[in-house]
Length: 138
Image (cartoon, rainbow, N blue to C red; front, side, top):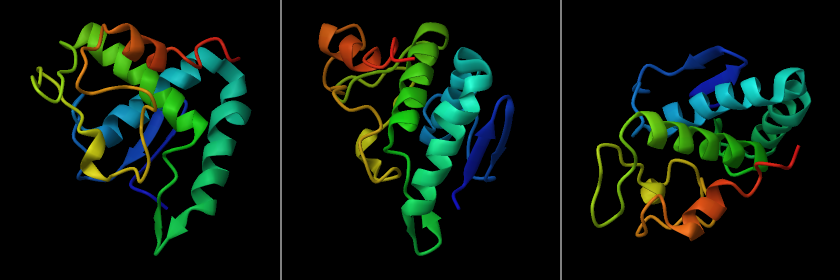
């Protein structure tokens, strides 16, 4: 369906995926691992099944474009925060940092972090609000 799938701490990814905070597929799948840690057994019902159903719905020519659903956005936010804290942070569109994730690259077919403004710093209050919007949802 796509080029990656994560369930708990097991991931299957396409050979083109790089172990890098700048690779959007790696960031999303690592975020799914972080989601499984945060959600525990509920991960199956809160994340895995809803995302699988979303991907099935969005099949387009054999490729899934389902990474704009709530569970994917939560996963992206968790990993974005993690890699910002432990791996040098993310830059802005005007000043790329050690890691940079180009939201406009078209990989996801949707906004990977709605409300996050890449022209503002990670620490900007608007960006922090976008990253933490679903934090207390479950």
